[in-house]
Length: 244
Image (cartoon, rainbow, N blue to C red; front, side, top):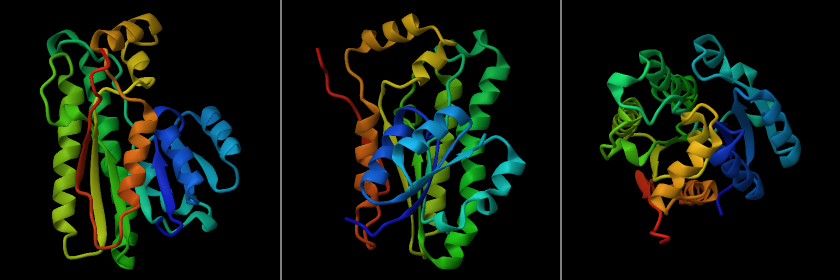
């Protein structure tokens, strides 16, 4: 068990973020819950108790992200761990040439540029303290080509290269950088992908017979954080087994 940590978690209101928040608080850590879904975020914070505090945030809002450190309550900082989990796949499951380019740009803006903004907001303080851990929730799509997922895959491939490069730049410090690649996971991203069509999302999952639960990824996050100071988990690929 690691010492209690001060954690900043994006995309906290649902799916992998929510499961991770529960695991972090249960382990005795304090968590700043960040998400653009303010109502769901506040409900989660109330559920988790005093070791969680909500912060409504859209990671694509450059001004808001640049002022993040000032927005965090004093007893929840300075941040030890940033978990970049916010992302979306709105309009996905469509061939690149057939989908709206604004959807594709929005995916890149959130999944890659938003992640970059959040990491950049906290890294200077981590470097000053020579202490910290960046955990980026990427995707198996960063490593494998999946037709109809070009912008999403591109965004996650960007996260992959950014993560590896940051780790190299910080190699002379005590700051850790980890990337987690979940395989297909049952979250609201499937419903979001099909613009709220629950039936389409259900059919999409059932085609594969095998998928992960958000709690599976939360366990991977906890494993990464539970390592001693001299151990850095660079990358984890988490795939489901065939449930057929």
